[in-house]
Length: 117
Image (cartoon, rainbow, N blue to C red; front, side):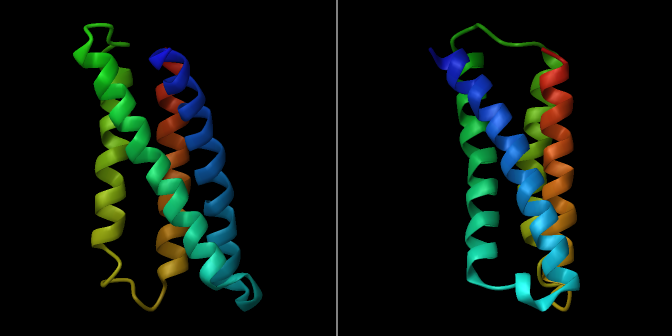
């Protein structure tokens, strides 16, 4: 059951972060894409990363781990959310660029993690 949830979460992480990454990069370039809906979508996509990490930890605690490199990429995604958030003040004049590229980075980590299973 938890493995199925983790697999669905992985694909959700990839799709959500890919979509908001593109949306945020469009918002960086075109003002009509900016606003609250974009920020809500970014928050949801990053929340999926946190939930995905928690399900991965639950799998690991139950001694049914998926493998060292898979777990490394999952942990890297979790840490990346914090790093992206930490850089928001340094890039306050380009927040959509930061979160757009950061979301695409998270998508890439998700793809790599899934390929290792």
